[in-house]
Length: 233
Image 1 (cartoon, rainbow, N blue to C red):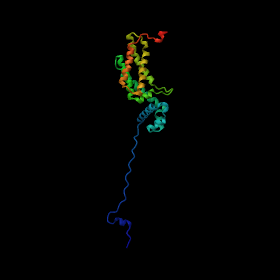
Image 2: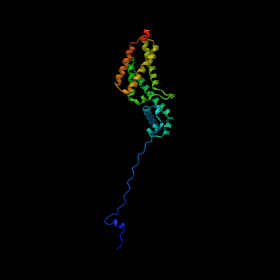
Image 3: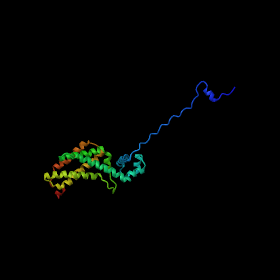
Image 4: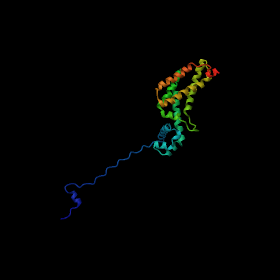
């Protein structure tokens, strides 16, 4: 009896089995390639967050690149180094804070202007916490970038013009407006740094108390104040 081949036996009683077809491989998701402008914005946002968390000195280009998932040369290509990235981040925050405060100063009455300035700063701290942390941290020596102090100086100069006119109408020496404007803005700025950490009471309450102290103090100014210790001597 002739031998039956394996092929023949497989065909007996039915169709010949065909080899199982390999399942098509799923395509790996392709990375979306950013434009140069998009990559730059991503690096600025990454640097802003790291500078806020760690400060300039403790932040490295390696960390920026790792968090942005790029290579170090990409960061150097856009900013030339850590100093360049920091300068861009700080410059943006300076302009954002100054624009916010100056835009808020719309009222004509000095007390309302104080309220608007205080609320504008506290709102910036509340909404742009990382940006404010970048500004109030110490900037690198010889960086040439603007700082939180420079922003407050700009605001103080605006307040100085307002106070100068008010002082003149009340018979005070308008030359002292510069001194008082620095004192007022400094009071608000330092309180803002404190509120950055504690976040209570509510910003409206903080602003109201700041204005209460500033306005009632201004309302009862002595024309020629002297120190009590000097009076006793």
